[in-house]
Length: 97
Image (tube, rainbow, N blue to C red; front, side):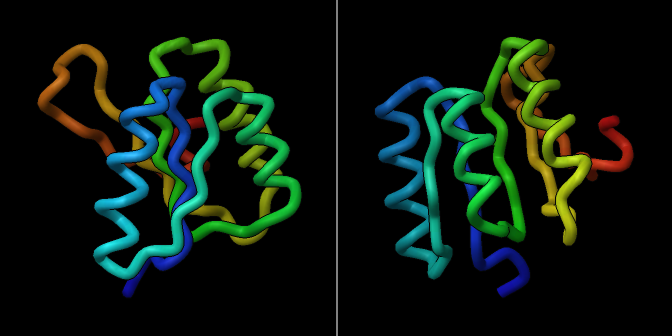
């Protein structure tokens, strides 16, 4: 599997529970975080293959992305495109920062 370890960041507890359950059932190792502080704390101690940022606040999202910029290896970053809630965009940390 391409992305076996995934960090999902969202302030909505229900979304985190659903995403964690669905991804785990598909064989992913999922960690969740509800805040930027929690996400950065987790990223300091674990490595991830992918990071799903479902955060609409640009300041918080940028704080996380700025931290991720210094990680090696860089995880793949997936973020929803809030201009069109049905579309999801894939970004790399290099392109985002």
